[in-house]
Image (tube, rainbow, N blue to C red; front, top):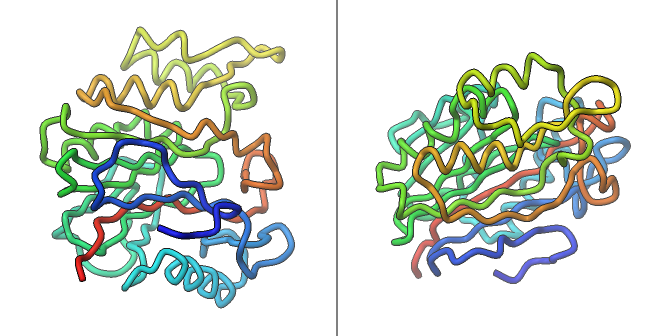
Length: 250
């Protein structure tokens, strides 16, 4: 997949040759102001026509034969499968075995998680902010894939880093109630709150679902303003996309 690596992150993971995956940065598009420049979100205040131009850029850059499967994300745990209706679906993850259908999620601090099976026949994308993680979006996604968990690979894209993601005690309590061993994923902040490690929390959730082959980019959206959108940093900002698909033959 020959694309401009200034604007796209290519996962480093042992995915099958038929599987393609990518995560965008904020560069390479047409938006201006706080949405500069490859904003792919339609619900963050940017001009809708410009966002559609950006989405067309993405589709062409990735040489997709159809537009990605976009979701109307609500920070929940619903997963759209192959039998889901067409159009923009209200869900925070999607799974497919259809070749050429790109599962996608939009983020601007939340954690994007891409998954595939070792045989390259199933792929998935999940939007894992703290609410979605607590609600079980990763467990639901793994279940929807319908394959033994030991045959699933996961890649975690850029998200807000543990050194800056400050949350209240109520957030820590939500995770601790469901997983008493997650204490190491939280560190006290200087303001009497907690610094949460989204990637570590996601890794624990995946492990508990049986997925142990986990890889990641390590990028912090908050700390790299030239590269990533960040809602926590800027409030008014764009959205990046993380996508995964099975290539069509011919």
